[in-house]
Length: 114
Image (cartoon, rainbow, N blue to C red):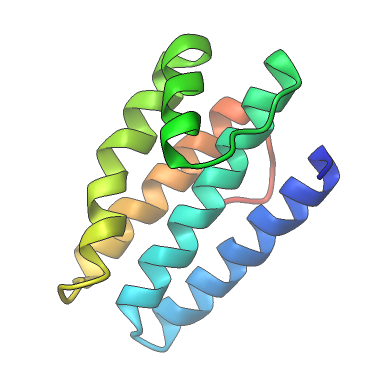
C-alpha cells in the first residue's frame, strides 16, 4: 500500500460517507467517514516513520507517539464509530464525525476534504 493508495481510499470513503449523508443513512456514513479519517491518519504515520498500522490498536499507539493531535481526534471519534454498529446515529453525530475528518485532513495537509 502506498500513500497514493491511502489517499485514494480516504477520498472514496469520504465520498461514500457524504453520499450516505444525503440519503440520510447516518450509520453507514459515520462508518465510511471514520475509515476516511483512519486512512488520513495512516498517511501521516507513513510520512513520519514509513510504517503502516496493522489495526486500530496499532494506529492509536503510533499516533500517540508520533502525532498526539491526531491521536486525540481519532480516539475521541472511535467511540462514535463503534457506536454505529449497535445504535442509531443522528445527523448531529455525523456532522461531528465529518468535522473530525476535516480537522485530520488539515493536519495531514491533504486537500479536498471540506
